[in-house]
Length: 277
Ligand SMILES: [Zn+2]
Image (tube, rainbow, N blue to C red; front, side, top):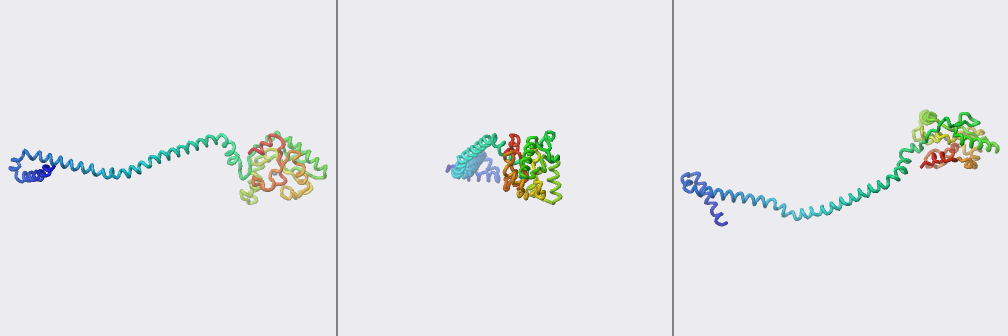
């Protein structure tokens, strides 16, 4: 090493001399290429060492980096495992939940209700019959028969129980909901408290009726109906004929109290219609 270091200045001197004095350069010409080669080799080697050492500081720091780099790998696999497990358990939950939840939860809550009113299929109008006291009122035959008996029994007790409304078509309900809403300048929510949107009225089924008291027409279709004798009779007797009040005070559909509106739940079809939840 010491020889090489000593030789380098000489070689440089020689090359300098060789440039300035070609004759001298010629005399020592045999040494010059070798010295140049050694210089360049050493120079390249020096550069090589420099570049090799230059990346090495990062490599020297690597223990810290690789330590931190090593930490994430154990963490990452763990994380991916947990997320993987989470996804697996989620999908398992979904898979397990979907068969039962889809029919039970999503259907009744979201698509089945509108402004608190449930959708009802339209009764086949050709299968409906009118009642003896009002040719405008059409009901399912079984319901009409019960209503006739109820009116007869009530009248026997001196009470003028009657029915003002039964089956309603979509057009009937469109008028009641949209046209009256516009006429009265009501908000949608306000209208929905007292009337169902078309397709969402129990009257579509032919199983719902609006009772009145023939002795007190002022109480027709309003809350004061609860003070009539007809309502008193219904409260005591309607259940015996398969009827129940659809919208009592504080009903979970948030529909306004309607003491005059009753529905028939005396057969399987009507029960499934009104208790479809
Ligand atoms: Zn009604």
